[in-house]
Image (tube, rainbow over all chains, first blue to last red; front, side):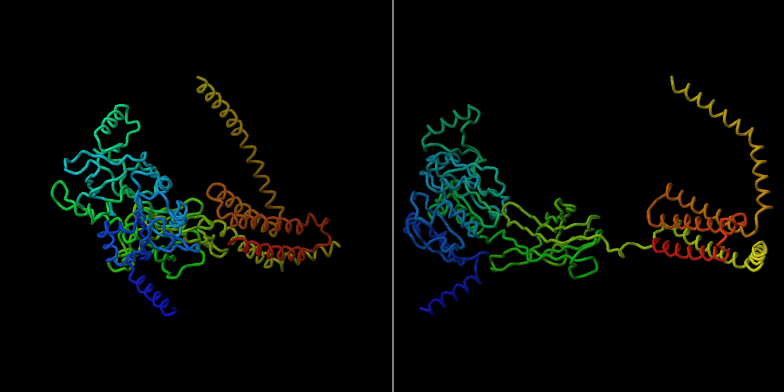
Length: 447
Length: 136
């Protein structure tokens, strides 16, 4: 028994050492029924080949639980169970949010026909879902599939996706984006698509009618999202997919109308890589600060000091399963803050040292408790936040310049008074013998 | 319309006193001349030395005050020290003058000129000690 646990622990350590993801390699996959996993074999095999440790479970199974003793049991949770209305006690909207707070990542497929806990969770992520049973419909391009199975061209400029990914087959529900800045749109609907009650053309009439009313109640166009990421403040990532079929083997094989292979395999792999924090994962290794001309940090800085601030930043390389120095950030800023940023300056990569970002600046003429702040938030990338408190003090009593050129008239005044005093005393004492004696003689005589 | 009138009136006013003052000048210079002559004859050389020192201190103090008012009062402690040294030395020297003046002998019967000078020297040294402490 004991030896088996040791083995498991050792195995776990070995696996975590070679983890594909920057946060861990244990994945829980929740499927409507376990047998469904054959429909997604390409996607799941891709994950297994990368080094992930997949555990399958159906929604009503009591075990394995996602959170036990307040500890997240899996690094990543995949919810591919759009048709399930009932879940075991441990899977609730609250527990899924708690999971994100604990740093686990979520990959969620939206249900297309029913109202489930997933549809009630989506608004928490600022996703606005259409009424139930209104899938995405598009009549373009001309093809032999149902109108609800739509080829969508992925955007070419999204850093999450491989550039020039071929169009992907999609079927499911679109959603509208709320104005949450943490949302990261990954795949948007084609411009000529819309959400409609059914696949029949009567749905199209309803859309035309809505368009005549000035777009009221209209779910159409490229502003609708199909796949969207969400990066929580803690760094955990949640990806919402409009339809689980995007990941299926069937769609991965299905030829596009142009007669070429679709991009589903590549696309789903990229989406999973982003969700599981393989790609676009950054971290700040360390930050240091010191005076110009020194190497170690000071306990305090004096106003108007020239200070060098340096940050080392790494990016996760999933190919080598290692963090590597990364100098690719060109728009990072450093703030030197006391309530307000007194200084906000760019923090450019230092030439010669990979992963090092450095800037030299003059501390403001203001004493108080300041902070060096890096707050780098870009859609899709891990948020970089760092705050270092440092007191800025006025010069010590002997730290001021001693003799100022502006004060020379005063110095000369004081010195000349002293010289005048010495000269006067000399004259007085020199004249003493003659005159004072006379005077003294006079006074004594008179007395 | 009011401007030119008032300005011309001011000009007229300003010319009047200047003409009167110029008419008074010979009498004034005469008085000053008499005063200077009387001073030169009646004052002992020792008191003249004191007076010269007092004039020097006064001019030095005025120069520092003008520099402070017109150029800069920074650093203010240096101004206070420099100006204070002039004023303090002036007061001490003036006291010395009144004590050694033969005309005041009735009032300072207890104080001999040597004693007065010793007091003056000690006071000055203490004053300069504080001045240099405050100057830098």
